[in-house]
Length: 269
DNA sequence: AACAGCACCTGTAGGC
DNA sequence: TGCCTACAGGTGCTGT
Image 1 (cartoon, chains in turn green, orange, cyan):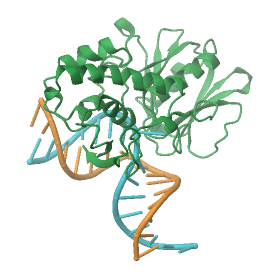
Image 2 (cartoon, rainbow, N blue to C red):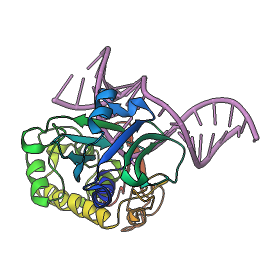
Image 3 (cartoon, rainbow, N blue to C red):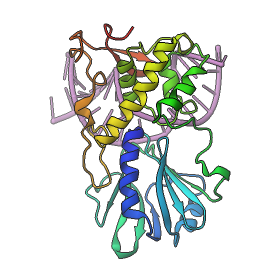
């Protein structure tokens, strides 16, 4: 469900709530929501103190006093709710308990979300491996786009987490609209002007969405179960048949690599 | 290398 | 109301 801006929103709130807290225990309500050994996860986390909460791509990172790290990826429908009693009773998968009766619940109807323990902090501290750079600075994004030689569609490349970490289906569509580029254009065929526009558009779209605390459709909520407001700012995503906000041409929806793909046939060439 | 198809899961919306 | 299909913000696997 959540992409970089939603995960960033959640991580910032959890950092405030959880930094310095000690986990008293973990309850595994749906064992497959743990990647790796369940018993090890449970044993290792009991008694651990959280020293920092952050984000890398779409992963939420919890740094522990021992030097270990655990990550949570929310995939499509995962939510993290911090409360004494979570507002949602259904679909609870994990519960991290803290002193004083408060707890962090992973709530996830589709059961795709995964928590994982990384017992040894790896050198450089980057978790998990294999991710491309963060796409929040134009300079960084330009450096990546500059080197693209792939004939894959540019949107497909933007969704590849090894290229840039954190962009998902909503913000790929939004950034390509802002840059005026067709989603199915071959990545290697972007000219310098297009690469420059896209390297501006991606951080602009993501930072604006972070400022709006993310996009909330039916299921996205932050850790206090509040909605973000970026859904009111979307230009193309979920707007098929509706008029383009720039030129009034109806937004078109197609399918690219099995995912819905929204664009303005007039503004994106 | 790159793509399609499917798997993982459940909920919801729309057609009939 | 019920039955059926398609689709959903993600990723990983397999086969071609």
